[in-house]
Amino acid sequence: DVHYISDLERQPDGRYVGVVTIYQKFEGTNGDKLAYKDTTKKDITIYVEKKETQIAGRTIEFWDVILGDIRVSETSI
Image (tube, rainbow, N blue to C red; front, side, top):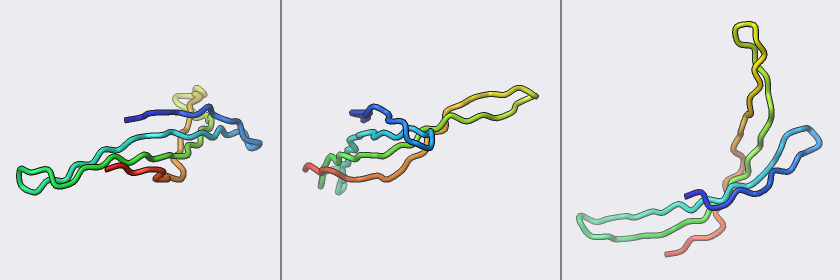
């Protein structure tokens, strides 16, 4: 589940940087029985940059989103 997206901050090179926070749920089973269950909170740095490309002689602008570091900030059982 996506929980939070920070405000994007413009960098001197023109890119924008922000953080997306997600919660990842995991359940492990042994046969039909639940053996383990946890939820992990992850913070992912994202880089966003406006780019251009040529398609059929027309210039098209688009946003390029790149994932950066993925940090585990919390795990709950």
